[in-house]
Image 1 (cartoon, rainbow, N blue to C red):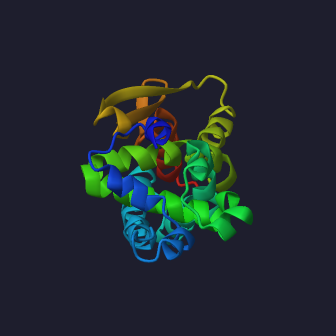
Image 2 (cartoon, one colour):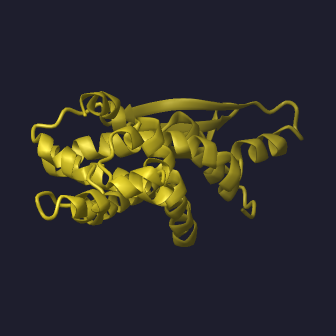
Length: 226
């Protein structure tokens, strides 16, 4: 468990919480009541994960409608994605599984690894509160979003650039106007300038997101249908 804590970047005050988060029901059944499974922690972790991800994408993508936010959240908390997060942490090596489950490759089973990620998140939340839980989740979510952006979102910067290029004398630039918040949850504000005029302002949890938001606002102000 010591190596897992290093991978998590979090040291538990109550080690029993982490042990409980790693205990699959097959293991608990073999122990005949001497240890509880991680199912209750998984239940709590599911809710903690949902609120952290929902809050983050809500503030990161201020122009996305509810339907798109729902789809984006679903892609970030689905079994496949959470299984991938667990594999990056090496959770499978630490799982407490019943003999039969272990023999059948339970330490690689996507559903078990995804459930364990949620249980570990709940354990972090109960041990240290919401801030370390946020740091734990967002380190993965931000990386995942960097891949999803190209697949799920329009590239407003490119669209704006193509419009401006029709007038070669015009110059488009993006200017960082400010940043706030702790290192794990920064918020950036960016202006997009056409020559010396501000034509859009955007905010986001990365400079790239803020630039896209600024470009989108500029397009909207131009009357471009998005």
